[in-house]
Length: 444
Image 1: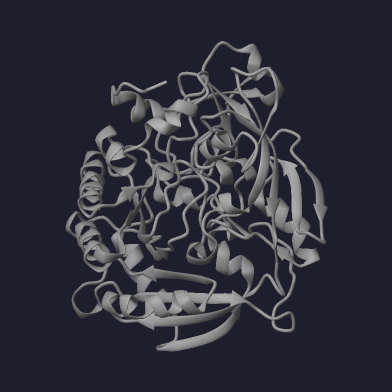
Image 2: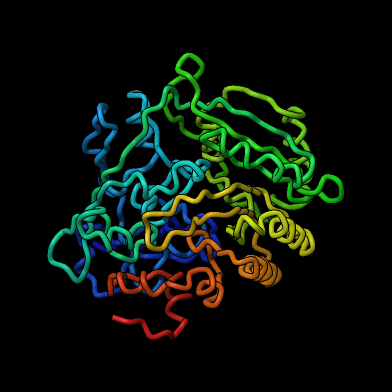
């Protein structure tokens, strides 16, 4: 059954290309001759979740959790189940996700397809490490394939981080971790200059499970790159609770006619946020919802960027060039007069992904987002790409909306390995725009 998107529900989180799209129920996808692509909950920032020349496949329809073993922490669920629903199910048993991104409103299938990472990459790596197995259907196979490290291992690796291009993930088996409390004993360290972050980040990573820094991207001079590093570990049971996920209390019902995230509003917000953090080091209990998913409390916050949407740019670059590259990226944003609301800096560890095509690799990663201002924004983002590639780094394809094919190839020089495992019927806007434009002969 084919359904026309009449309510703009099939947009990516960046809201750059808002066109009507078609979606087909999962059980009927084999009936169409069009190109197809699985679609989860639309929290990808760019166009890796879109296939505008084909149809999208609804993975959330009737998705449910099938089993959870409190003794082993192993959960079996459909790929369309949201992380927030997993948390609601396992927190009462004293479990939590081993790896989680900055929103709980993504599907298990999306977490695998994007091989998401969190604030503890230096300890646990990417989401793929907690995936034990999944079942997969492809257009070129008559059977449901069980994929794990031991069975269909190459397809298992290609699907983790494979952006939904290897087939439809049906069911997922993941390992959850036992925690004394989902809440976090947080150590907040306010630093007055970017150099101070680099002076302390190694020690914080070695001491704590979680570590991430918020950066005031708009400052200059002696306060250049000031921010707050938030390290932490799961609290003792006596210190934290087991509160269940709560629905968003605030909502942005529609996009305002202008961008509300600009350098003027952000300068005031950043100053208030920075000074809210106590000088020096401060320890406290942070509720897990606020520590892991602060923006989940505001439904539709992406609409604040106005009618043209937003771009997010995430890069990773080698440790040896971490300080200088971060400075160059932040200075580039200021020079082009672009203000970033979510400016996050952290370090990826040396733990290699089990996925064939994962973005995280050892180094520093900087995430910035910007309101779409048309051609001047595209030109500016291209310069961020060039700085990243020059430093020996990579740009995140899972959050991209406009990366050129040459930047993609420099970021993932072995991209053909994923192409070799791509289901011939599956295609995304991103893959069409990058890999298919390289005109490279792909070996069979």
